[in-house]
Image (cartoon, rainbow, N blue to C red; front, side):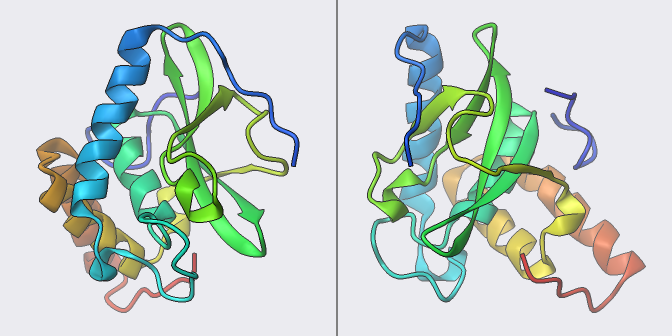
Length: 171
């Protein structure tokens, strides 16, 4: 994966990686636990069916995970909905990570070799996120106690608002 560059200062059939270092799995579970404790209606995008705790949280979660773990943000379509996830280097592997899989009936943490988790993923940039999504990511990172992510997302929001005061791109 390319080095993180989006926020200032921070870093069907599916094949899954079956053998991972316990510390990688522990790190992902700890991050998911922090995020899920912070999920609320005000951190979720509208228009998603309530199929799991993370319904509507994916783009905000991808922005936060990007700041915590670095790497790239990705998107795809699942069950007719836009879905965001991450690609990071962990444990010596390039991995696709989805910490919101439960909104589609999967286990909450989806982990796979890069490029094999979901079909038709494409790399995304922070400029592809709406201001509303960044505000949800800020609230999520603040509630989850992820201060470095909070600071980076807050900086991105301030920068965006000083450049384009009324930015409202759809995700």
